[in-house]
Length: 256
Length: 328
Image 1 (cartoon, chains in turn purple, yellow):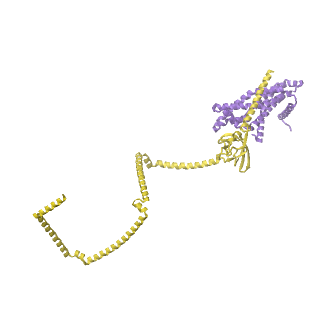
Image 2 (tube, helix red, strand yellow; image 1 turned 180 degrees about the horizontal axis):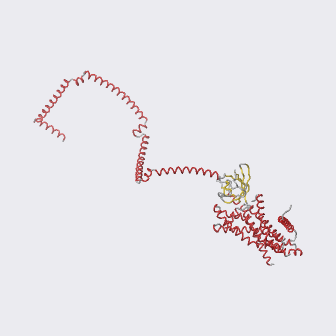
């Protein structure tokens, strides 16, 4: 059976990505963990992304509330806006929105950074000088991305719900205390846990795709741009695919 | 190196705030579901739970008191619901409290409402079974409502018809528009009141009379009350009866007498018929009567002439004086 060139390329890439991921798990448990670099990456990936993700979350909460409000008023369930926004933010909007923004900001920067290091042969020189470039560059970045995204997502939930509260009070009137207690009245552990856990997968996916695309950049400086671009595209698509998987799994076990 | 430390501090704050959010939200949810803090459990059995699930709220007199912790089916008509409630409320919930499945609003979640029992009882203990009350079924409620509605429809149509008839009735409107009617009614009522007053007074008189009769006062009372009198009356009546019987006989005799007399009259026998029928006798009687008349007239004249006599006048005078002297 003869496969087309693109199909072969796709399979090749999937295979390479699998090896790359397997290597990550092998390297992370081998000694000499680069703590300092890991914290630096956490700072860059996590802390530096907060303003962007917070802003998008706030605007999303604001806009959704304003848009959903007339319809809910029509049904006479305006008082359920806190419950609805809380639930949708915690379960879906918070994690997915954060992950997409995260992919756009971090995935592209990883692809570009590692890609330029590859094309300027810095990675090769690291190998020559005895430093494990995978350990130093990839493991720290992927791990930082995996751990930082859930934190960002939680904060995004809070900011988004606050945005919703602000939007509610443009036309209606509800105290923040009542708003928050209404939000928590309708939340369960089964809402928070799957959402929180899927954030780790999203973060890992963004980190590993970004690093993979950057690490194997070819064809010079043009390749850097392509690496950055495809890192964003692939990780974004992967986020949605993972979301689909998670929702089906949680639905199957009955904690949806 | 300084910037590295400050970066690490910022990162620490960032991560901790994220963790805080996660922990706080979990705590809030846990508090809502009574997972933390001391609590106690109660049970209630229902015929059907109509969609109640784990985690639904339990309210005691409207206060959020806990959540549903488990639902077990005992048999086809009995479902046991396990509830976890806040320990703070334990002393307020009595053993006679009733559990009822209700709705949060018209379309909201199911909720268990605990209502205080009417009978005073001691506070519940952990694991107690509460009595349950049948749920107000929306379906049956609507059914009743629709029946009521039908009735209302019938009533309203009847009412409409009646009102239409009343509206179109001319005599009624004439009565209503007659301004003198109210005055007449007032006068009538006044008269009515007067007559009722007099009726009252006569009724009281009658009452007095009756009471006096009862006491045996007066003739009627005596008659009614006195036994002896009654017997007398009876005897009298019997006597009267006899008398009337005698009178009967008497009239019969009189009758026969009259018959005989008539017979005599016809035949002209006896004294009376002769007197009545004989013209000669009648003439004689008439003569005798005229003779008597004449005689009395002459006697009158004699007496007048006697009064004119002197001697007699003197005698009369003396007699008068003697009568006056004895008087003095």
